[in-house]
Image (tube, rainbow, N blue to C red):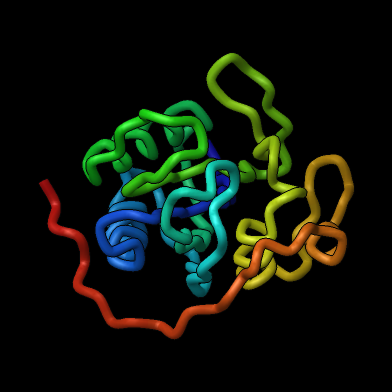
Amino acid sequence: MAATDAFIGLGSNMADPSAQLAGAVARLAALPDTELVAQSAFYSSRPVGPQDQPDFVNGAAWLRTELTPLELLDQLQAIERAHGRKRIRHWGPRTLDLDLLLYGNEAINSERLTVPHAELANRDFVLQPLLDLDPERVLPDGRSVADLRQQCPDNNLQKLHPVARAPFPSG
């Protein structure tokens, strides 16, 4: 199977969010049959949904993988669990959220997975990191990420300064 470019959205607002994201990127780089091509800067933003929670730190990772979309989703969910993710409240606080945003030029709509991510066009904290990684990226339906970013509602997105972090311990 040929490798496919996949873009992963990263988010956290608990337990040192920047460290959670840095650890997730290290784990993504270690996935089988997968190469980390690049990672975006991290950004802070207001939460979507319930506002009684801390701001989020978000970013994105560009992978080149031979994993199928569902195999990749399983790996993402395993990384979330390793970071203590508990699904308690919809759009609630979380230690780590990993979303498969794009998988090649595929449009996927199954019980377990929707790609491109259903809310991608409405989230500046997803679109801006995607633009950082690939300014020319076009969605499977022909819309450009750059055009979507221009039309996207503002969520008080602030670019964070990079912080050197040790990789998240494996295990």
